[in-house]
Image 1: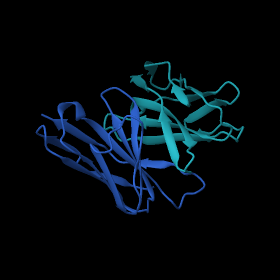
Image 2: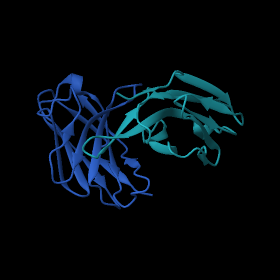
Image 3: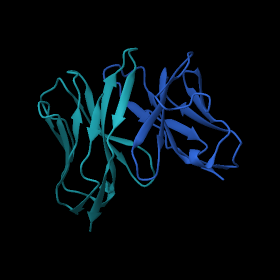
Image 4: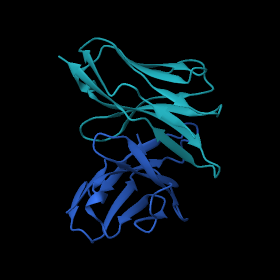
Length: 118
Length: 117
């Protein structure tokens, strides 16, 4: 099946710094990737939809200047948390759609990145 | 707006027994997809089963099956012959198509399944 990787799997940073999280589709092309945020023991909340070669579409309430998304290629999307603060600490999950599977259109999830801001 | 509700925060089942997880959703659309995802302690989301709304037949994947009641907007997951490895958080999800043609997934709050040996 399709594999999605995320890097890093765990990152700790100081308040005020920026952190970049990478999401890669390893064996398929993904024109669309999704970024989710999951708080402890809670559901996944969609943050934004990342489209290759165009601007990301952010969900209501998500600050686009704080959560910068770049989808420069068909296999890579990045999420940069700028000027991170402790309240940004969370589990961030990306997912990708395999453009070949038009009949199913399911998304494949990455393993997630745990961000801790001190 | 579409919503997905999982009314059971936690369920327990004895090993080898059967358990049913509930999910209801609200939508005015007629064509959509529904999914059940499993999130084990590793936090990796794993697709368990999917159902296309236009198909009346309930989806089945080995020990996993769904009871899809479109009129009632209900989508429950039945796990037969439960195994210790089934212990995880289970999320029900609804997929809709946005005005721009992209897909958006809406997740329920999850049900934590415990399997007792």
